[in-house]
Image (cartoon, rainbow, N blue to C red; front, side, top):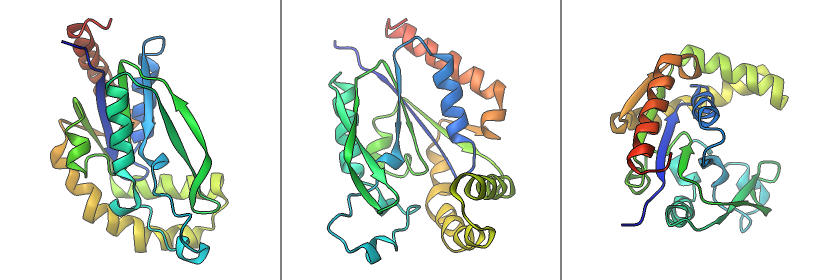
Length: 211
């Protein structure tokens, strides 16, 4: 029987700390065979649309993602075949001409706000994590990030959060919590939960004779 990589899905709302959890798990296995696939590299190609139409893109809605391509790439990686991961250019709101070559590894972390929303993606995962952080913490983190790192105004961040991020979270992201095997409160600050996850992954790897 051919061995198959371990796939870990990590999700949670914007600002929940899912990226911190992903990084902590990745760092724990540094030196081993591990890679991260970010769902937000797989936004749909919109080059066929006028720029004005692209500006209306709701990046927090499931329909914004090209899950067919993401699933195709994951299935290749599960067969130990390399893939060329797309790159999304937010300046022009469509896919870039560039790609990132990704070699297969024994552990694949799939991270994104809606990785548990699609049943086909869930079926490819060995472990499903939901990073659960209070809404007030998430909005503070998003405000800080968007103002400091992305040059956004306070009003524009609040407007986007109120009209898009929050309703999309409540409608699409929060309900996927029921699919999670493990819920991690407070994201990257929860060192106990992360240590338990790392131990669990090590056990699976040992069972598959990867370590």
